[in-house]
Image (cartoon, rainbow, N blue to C red):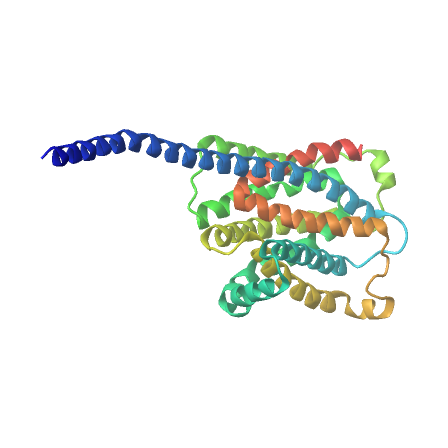
Length: 326
């Protein structure tokens, strides 16, 4: 009798102890989950801010160096070959990052087989922005061959307006009246900069074969292509499970194929006569590296932010380009 009662008392005390300990353990697990979520949020925010800063610097340096290579004296390199090399470098960099994530070469090949070779329709979707980005990159070389760096940078910010329009149409985003007002002011500023008077110094330094009207047309067409392709790529990135670097491999590979076709159509006979690397020096290679880096940074910004924020962030490159080009 006594043993039975003592056993029941021990059981009751054990249950009370469990009841007292359970809230503490639940609190500890909840705090750990909250800490993990906070850490991931901070990492995501830092990555977004760092990518935006790097993209701004990359835009400013790329435009200045590309403008220099397209207007200096000497042998002129083929812009189509530079586009192919920049896309190929982007693919190679993305493959190296994927290889580091997978650990071994065999795992990387299996990963690429499962996500690329066995999903041809998914790759076909990526071919749309790949085709547009390749044409856009070629248009940038045409624009910078006919416009100065400051005018190009201001005019190229029209892509913010086109990106906003495509975001509203394709992603159903809503913009506030203040945002629409800022976009209208931007459009007016781009229009006014085209009518600025030319001083005698700039007219003397400009080359005779430059055609500002062609450069302006190339910029406007490139802005519409950038807006559509950027929003389309954002929709792909945020609507599928594939990783960012896999998407860069798909996008870059398709861009290389399209770039080779474009190069053959536009500069095929000249390249066969003079060579693929005709006119190349270390400055041209700097342009290629900067352009490839820009493609990777754009993908990171689109993944962790959005295209409109990317557009406003790269607008800061106008100030750097204008200061450096004075």
